[in-house]
Length: 162
Image (cartoon, rainbow, N blue to C red; front, side, top):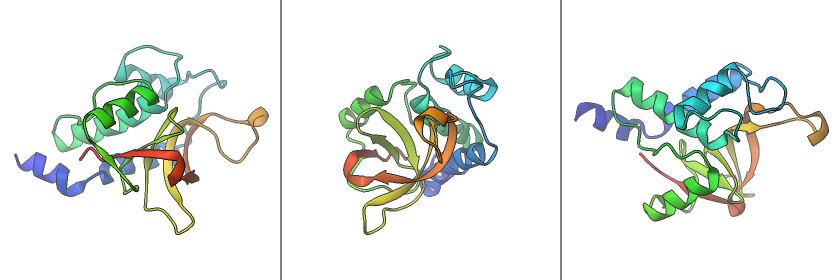
């Protein structure tokens, strides 16, 4: 019971800390192929399949690591696709209108990440995401885990799970 109370009190801060540490560590795919030592770890945590899109698996892994540290059950099911995670959140009535720290964001019904703060007046919010890239065009991208400040509230669905 004390651990559950600690998780509610901590909200989504613990998964965000874990996700930001992964971004700071510079986790990248080995060759833009949805593979790499750390990427494989995220993939194995959700469904064990390797080489798949892993943005939702990264979100699951962050929550799983936080749950282990807090000695509680992971509040997320091991869903490995962003669209499926979005459907689960809607079905379970977890949807919130604007992002808070640790909320799951699903961008354009196809990409998952974690909100790391609130939205600005212009509707942009900070996030940390896996299976994405930053600071380059598509041809020169390096897929990995990045802290970003580009997602738009009006293009996302948000879920609060703790």
